[in-house]
Picture 1 (spheres, rainbow, N blue to C red):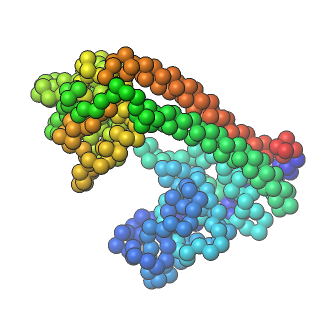
Picture 2 (cartoon, one colour):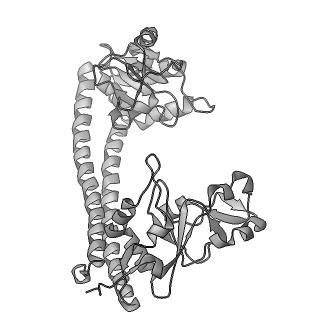
Picture 3 (cartoon, helix red, strand yellow):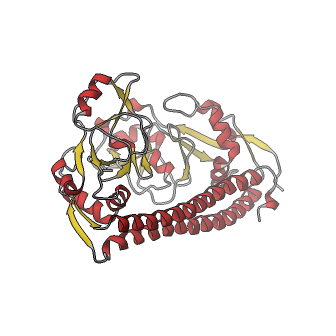
Length: 402
């Protein structure tokens, strides 16, 4: 059992909050030199990739913020409370304004401190002292120093660390296995989907998309937005898991009527993103709400092809390769309407055969989603187990985490 003596964090650590933003302007940065460590180094627990550097003059000026091995850094703005221990051999450098540096005294094991700062006890206390609305920020160092932590003798701290290392190694192994199973489930469906279009039976043909459907694109204008009105859908509303009309801006009915002649979206149509990182991503319109579109292609179905069969093909690797190959460069890469209309689509001539393929893919997709839900829940449960283990470790229940 842990000796439940507590001490204030300020009694066991030296605190240095990163410098004011004005002390590290972009004009200070060099192509190489002394590293400037940022939140990403605490968030991702890595110290090799450095984006910014200062020269020796600036480094000496800011010597107080120098980072040394054995220090612990914590992210303090936005993504808060992520901690990492500074390893040996890092590039000499300083912290920026979004980091807090803690240097433990000889009476505090740095690994023990890291585990405690990941525990619910500390994270809840940190949240309680958070300030800011849009971008959250950690409270002042003065307040952080008053937070109390269990402070058993150093040998007991090391015993706790050893027990947590063992428990976390087992949990991380289980998480890795669950993550691999999740990936395998996704790849199984992708493999089957590819096989459908790779090993085509007799009776298939290939035509341009505009030969079997009506293909349009949305407006390229940027109308004036209003607080409420007709939803204005962009490529950002087309997600991996389907079409989502949330978080849209709104336009007037007059603007919508002007755009509607070009893109009269209806229930059951297919939307495909034409610009940006998610270009080529497609989804069925499964709502009956009226809306306008921008930077989005519209594929209106007819009796020539089953829309769900077409959607499955558009989600295949073959289709995505076509989109990337036919994209044009610029500030944002895009696929033009002409290239979209020329999209080569393979399909069985028989509508009934298309429907059979859709039924098989739907069935496998549902099974895959069930497996994914199981493995995602497993990963979530393991994360909760970590929190539980940490809570027990710092509440005197060490003997229960074997």
